[in-house]
Length: 78
Image (cartoon, rainbow, N blue to C red; front, side):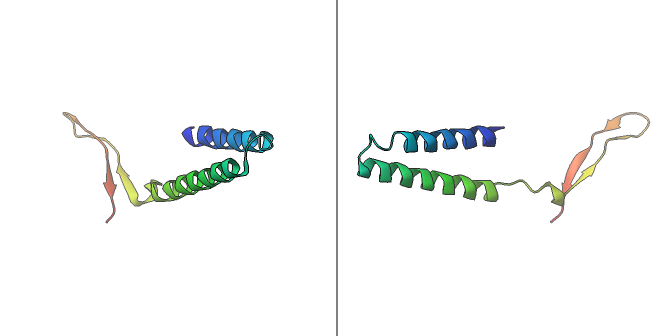
């Protein structure tokens, strides 16, 4: 959900830049576009690096041994 919100904010920012680009000076426009490119590259890099790969985790379900419930847990493969 947060990724979609960030994506929409970036799209609105780009539309804002192109809509009002005639009112900005050239230096301001170049600076804004370079900041936008840097932010997009950092977000893309963070998305790939911080992606949680849940395929490597094995889920052990809870068990009932007759007296108490032994809770389930995730066992990570190393």
